[in-house]
Length: 441
Image (cartoon, rainbow, N blue to C red; front, side):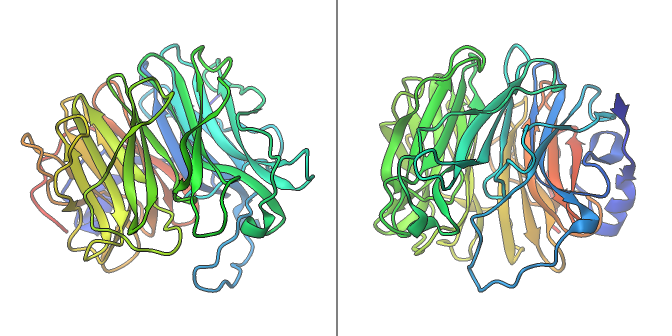
């Protein structure tokens, strides 16, 4: 059964925002999450058949939203109990299937905007989903967060029971994590390689000594379309990985790239680790050439990547540069060296949450959230033929806060964008063609 959601007319949004940039196919946005429900943190993937696959976290009915809890500056909770929903469009986003709950147990998913589930589509059309899940340690009987995987082989109509990929939680880090949590295998990522192999990676906090210490990155791989996974192994040893900055993944030919924020003696900075042996080990790495960010804590920021042959592009938020914000850099030699970083949005006092998209013609699109003189809005900048990043333009979205974008590239060269809107709603739009970026808002 298909449902068609209300289409917001982008021309009206363009007039309200003074927008003169990239266009959405069909001049429309589509709300995919169900009206009246709290939907956040979407992720998106497009298969070789062009079908658009979307997941998001569901926090229940909007009318049941609890009042915000007072918190001290920097204080946060390690607790989350949500559901994960899936919807699919096979007609370019014009209509969407009724949302399907991915997890079997209600409230199973441990999810935040900074530790999101991931989705990918294999060459055979299998839909792969990786998510952090509330669980219980068999040893301590305390709560833990597990790294779980599920898949659908019927275009998202049903999903298998989630499988735990991490090792048993035979340690107790409640003194570190608090709130009766003994272990977390979270802040992970998943991606489908060019040959269909499924790579899942997550952070293991078992060896962390204190809050200033780093986690390890563990990985498990499936070579049979998600039917089975290898036994996990540590691919980046403990102490190195900033423990609340979600991992990212990309592929450069035969190389597997793992993006993370590494704890150095003089900063916590975006780093790309590289594996030339299908993820068995990551002996090579490069620290992105952004100013050192000396921060005594976890900044909750990812390292985003896009790849086109020997060209590797990266974007990340950093507080080391002056001014802080989103910076963009690229390599033309397979990651051996990177160019000096470029500030993505010089006119914005605040910019964050970058996403990278690689078009069919090798053009890179950077999409991020920023605040200029009002709520958070979404912006885009695109590279020119010589690789230079153009000026930022505001994307036309509904009024209010538009935040936490996620992107996916379609086989036709289009870029699909999803985001979290003001009242906890998930929207999707399509950027239909390359745009010459000539003006800034």
